[in-house]
Length: 338
Image (cartoon, rainbow, N blue to C red; front, side, top):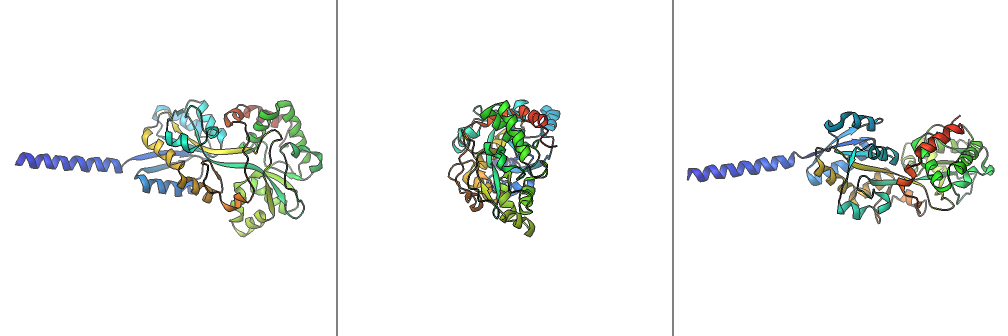
């Protein structure tokens, strides 16, 4: 009898220990996206799985930090706000292959690595903001931004900013370096002010009648129109056109994630990525961040949907990535920011 009691007690203890172990599961997230913007997603993940997410916000220098930490790095998942930063992690051997049917089914092939080393989670288009009062522009190509008819009428942030580096690299992928150099010189000649500030400053300066059109990301329109009174004025002063390459579609950039090479919690890391690709999480991305979901069929925020159908360019992100260095060199060569 005593033996049975002991065995029962041992069994109960093991169950309790097992339950405690499950509840103690965690995953470490390194992210360049401000935690407040993704916290609703992480809270949902925790509630659904019981897995605690430890978030480390790294504004700059994620690559250097993970390289320095090496095998001792606690990072399980690395999430970046732009593809350039994500591919840097991959190219430096800091990621590992993930073979997930859930991820491969949810995310289209052009928005994930063929070898499973990265996955896009949300998208935004590099759009053209148009002053409602002065310009009835309904369509434009990226190539047309260099047309002299726009002389003194364009606003844009620094050509060295990752969002523009990515667009320039895409132009190289379409047209080659020589044509891209001439294109950059044409845009520079059309600037209403030096290339500077941020994307929301483009809308501000359009309202201020400094420029008639500007190049900026789509999601900022949602943040402005739902922001404070001043930003609402900026956002409501513009229409948004989704440009296309003459031999392609609209240029996009993505936020995405990868599992760290030395992830101590690999299983939980994959679970987090799978959750972020779910219908529910993708809808939160669309509603709270005003981004395009990567999963087909997920409803887009009404503001973003009002821009019209997004016809994504046909050049793969991995191909564009090859030309980032050349893009930066061309920006310096034409003194785009001066």
